[in-house]
Length: 335
Image 1 (cartoon, rainbow, N blue to C red):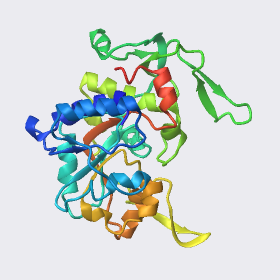
Image 2: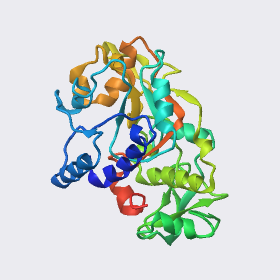
Image 3: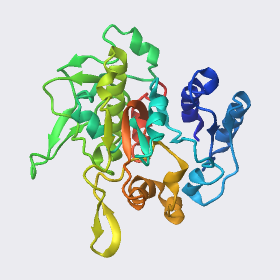
Image 4: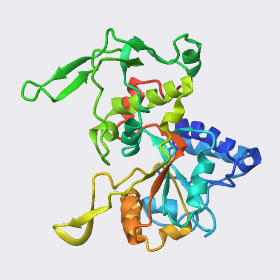
C-alpha cells in the first residue's frame, strides 16, 4: 500500500488487534504496485507488529488478494481493506464480522463514506450536510486547528460562496464555479443554496465516483458530524445492494448478466468467508475483482445477499478519478 495512507490505516488496525482488546488476529498485506519507499515503510510496520505478515501469493493481478495464501481457512472471517481507508469507527470491525458469520449473506460491506452507492443512502437518511467551499483558506490546516475554533470545523454562512453557472441551452444544467476559490478552501455548511451536485446511486456516476469536489464534500460532512457528535445519522441499519435485483440479460450476449446501474458496489472494505469464493471466475477476478464479487459471484451463488452494515462506519479517501483533485484541493489527508 501507499505509505502515507497505510500509516493512517495501520493506526486503526493496531487498535483492533486482539492484543489491544479487538478481534483481529492477523493482518496480511498483499503488495501490489508498491514503490520502494512504500516497501521500506511496510518493513517497519512488520517489525513493530508481530500480527502483520506478507504471505506468499499466487494468481494474476487482482486475484492475488483472494488466493489460497490469503483466504485459507473455512471458519475464518476475512476482511479485504483498501489502503486508503482513513477512518474506522469504534466497533465497526466487530459489527462487520458479526454479520459476515451468518450463512444467509455472501459479502458484507462496511458503511463506507465516499462510496459510489452508499453515499446516496447517506444522503437519503439526512446524514450528508449541505456544504460548499467557503471564503477562508485551509492551507495545511491540522485536525487540532479545527477543534480549537469556537465554531467547530465548519460554520453556517450565506455570504460569499462559489457562483452557480447554468448553460443557456439547458437552464437546469448547472454547476458551481470553483476555479476562483483559494487552493484549499475551508468547507462550510450553507442554507438556502442549491446543492453542490445531485448524489446518484450509480456505480460510476459523476457524484460521487468521478468528481473530486463530491469526494471532499462527503468527507467534510463526516468530519463535521464527528465534531458535533451527530455521526449516528450515518447508521442506516442494513442495506441490501440487490434488493431490487441484480440486472437482466445482455441483449447482445444471451446468458451474460447486465447489471443495473446500482448493482455494482465499491469493494473498498468488506468481509466474507472462504465459501463465498467457491466457483469464482479467476480470469475475471484478476481483471476486475469488483464486478466479479459485487454482483457476478452473488448471482453465481444463487443471489445470496450482499449487504452493508450501518454500524460499520468507515471512510474511503478517494477513487482514482478523484485522487488528484482531493489531494490538490484539500487538506483531508493531512487532517
